Image 1 (cartoon, rainbow, N blue to C red):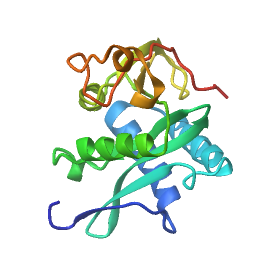
Image 2 (tube, rainbow, N blue to C red; image 1 turned 60 degrees about the vertical axis):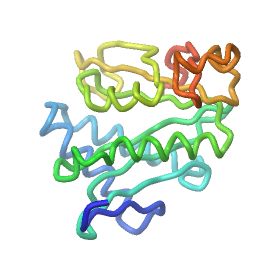
Image 3 (spheres, one colour; image 1 turned 120 degrees about the vertical axis):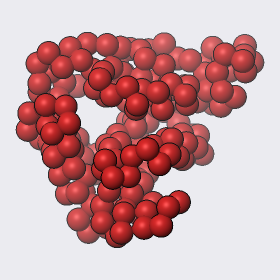
Amino acid sequence: MRKGISIRRDLRSGDIGAIIRMHGLLYPREHGLSPNMERHVAAAVTTAIEHGWPDNGAVWIVERDDEFAGSIALTDEGDGLAALRWFLLDPSVRGLGLGTRLVDELVAEAEQRGFERIWLETLGILTTAARIYTAHGFVCVSERLGPPWGDPGVPYRGYQLALPRSGGLAAQRGDKAARPARVAVLAEVDPLPRP
């Protein structure tokens, strides 16, 4: 890890607000989204907390010089399903391999906790994030135009990763060449409930 950059696994005072605020600042600035994105994140974080997060999931907070610089979270959606959420890094800490490391750690945590699959939804234009997800074995299982996060005409993609305990297709076949050893494909579309 570079000097001044750290990752911690606990929520501290101000972190929840920082997660919401960073989404509210960076998505409009970098991708032209409206303030609806910030409201969506605030509602999703609140719902996750009401359902026991982070105790029944996990959180990683990235700091640069002791200041909030990003996050990723794992939430328990029930029935063996976990969600990868609130994955965003400040531009000052991008390009350092942190995204890959955070997704590595999140997938390992999900496996350790016995989840069967991980699901996420993201903007279709986030090609760097998509490369990280697919490198970890996530498969795009849905594509649509907004407004899941309130902005019409914005392309969204849903990705899913089946973990070995789920006995997915690759795990059943023992097909290690098709996917990384810990990954199997599970073709379900959009399994997260919509508010």
